[in-house]
Image (cartoon, rainbow, N blue to C red; front, side, top):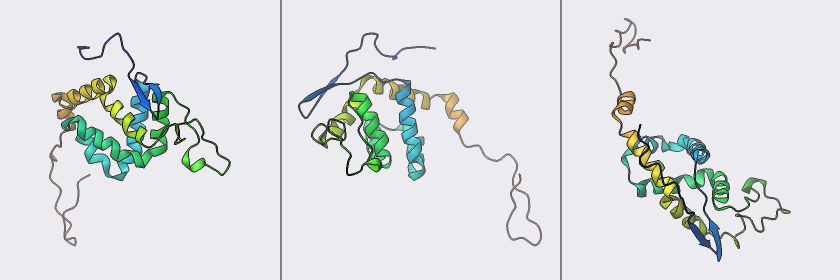
Length: 174
């Protein structure tokens, strides 16, 4: 097995400037894959399964568009992930906010993290070295002949049986 493309041994964190404050982006790892997978799994039921199945055949721009499409369906999870990624307090989730809630200084404070910051973080994620390496590996894996063989549709080896005389259609063989 080759480890080519696993990334450099020396890594320098990219820095984002959002509303005049600099945020040093952290490395991404297996726990981020788990978090992303949970977010994606929570929205697959909303019709994203076909798009997910085609992930190995799309460009990075299309992956970015897919990610943006997912944001509203799992927004609190995405906000918390972004907060952890840039190293800022999460604050109180939308459904838990009351009249006494104070999100000052958190990612949910518009003076700290304005609306434009979301697009900046998404762009930084798409260009992040770890994300590029991960999706490069996913694309190679999706094109692997062994995986394609495992996931290809196979015709039924035995045709369905004839219907009973009082039925108008064929029955399925179990």
